Image (cartoon, rainbow, N blue to C red):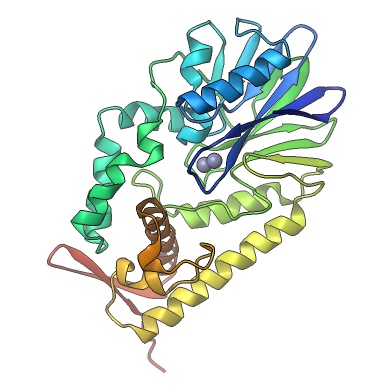
Length: 332
Ligand SMILES: [Zn+2]
Ligand SMILES: [Zn+2]
């Protein structure tokens, strides 16, 4: 399903449904220029997404050849999964090198293994970790063997007849990049800013302080003049500052909630704390969460715990290979 979201330049959204995924669908954006086109993000590497994306491109009369470029905003498989389609036909692919390297490192399973070992130290039972082996992010990930044009913060790309500014906003992933059209004040926010759901913040073994970095990245773009914000999932908006303030307030509430729980349940693991947090899973209780959601929820809990430890609010003690957390008691 395609929808035109902007004229001059002509920008379209291809809705790529993500079956059995709470995100529902990915927005793949297409800037259709006279002498070239730009596609931003692809959907998972699975037949349903491929069909939706290819049908959208066909309706827009866009052929995958060297005058069509692909910009991958970040490494997540729902955004990068179908890069192989583009790379195979010689389309230039743009991506931040940090996220590209992560894709390469993921190929032999070592990054997943590192995350599993970490989650085990945070109290997640092995049986639950094993249920993750079939999660969509792994099953539908891209083939990372594609030539990449690395992009960095502040780069200006001239693609599809437009001047696009690359804005590196680490947090959701280490290398997430948004794209900005300064003249038109159109902002492709990817998963950095979402409007109907809150972007997930995880812990990363090669990026310390993901939440701190994320909050900084929100402030980095808060004053950007924006007339149209186009997110990676769900619907967009005509401004971002108000939404950024809401997201910051959401994380403040989460941090306060973890402090409260750490006081209530001393010496807990992150896995002990996570079930007591407020999750918006359509009224479901922790025990009924699908395994993938537990994985993301524990990661999100950990990102907040990491922030609190770094700010001296919580302390961590490792016993028998498992980490336990307590409030730091200050002498009065
Ligand atoms: Zn993402
Ligand atoms: Zn996403």
